[in-house]
Image 1 (cartoon, rainbow, N blue to C red):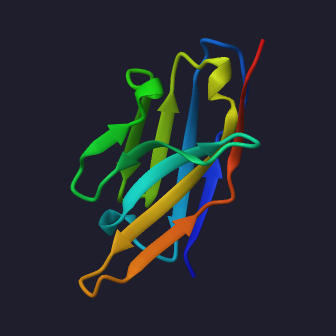
Image 2: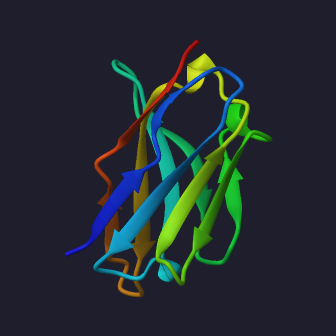
Image 3: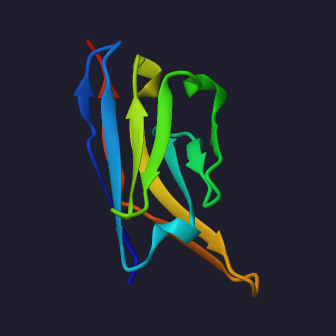
Length: 120
């Protein structure tokens, strides 16, 4: 059974930093694309950052230069370092693991989410 457990959310002032962690169990993340999404009430879940199994990364424009996704395959954990936080970054952040095998079967897992609130 695959589980993703996020941690590190909380309340931070504008301009502050947080680091989110997503610890995986039941599978090995090295073969997955690992991503962070976020969602605010009434809006669709948004892809924030992704890290492929080959090491490439991509970010939504609104966080480029402020957020960094990284992964430690030895610890089976992915991180999201968030700097220069803005009130509009307030959301529930979700960790996602996704891969497609050679038979084109898709594997998609989600964490339970962690709240990030940016407010003075």
